[in-house]
Image (cartoon, rainbow, N blue to C red):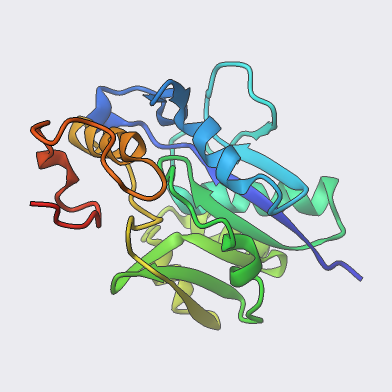
Length: 222
């Protein structure tokens, strides 16, 4: 009986607020965002792929292309991941999705999301929902196909309303693990957090401009 878990990294966004670049290839602290995400996922799952449209560069994992060329959002990426698993990895019963622009993902994300038995289990932190960081039952593929093909309301939250769901809460301190990078300012905040190290002890001079730390969940060190 299928019972394995696969992880699909959603990397189909256009990165408009970052200048129209492919987010997965954006550099953060000397590594691409996709490398940061893969590092956080190391040891959490044996099967990992990237769902993207036109992602270039040498990647150490399989790249899945969405079924629709007109970019129909995260649900299209989820569907592509479920279909890929059903064809190439029939032993997989659930697919965990994460966004490529979340470089601080929890190291126990897959284990905790798949500990629940709902159709969809999504992450929360700091009172916020993160519907693209979720575990999806592969049996949802056909329902997803209908939703994506209709190209109506492609909201992940709206799709979730028609199925059994559960939330899995993660601590939002000292860094919110689902902080995502949408703008150059977000990128600067992430650079600051990495420079401070895992314990968030500043390794930069005390008079360094630290305004980017606001809003990332970093402690107030003034």
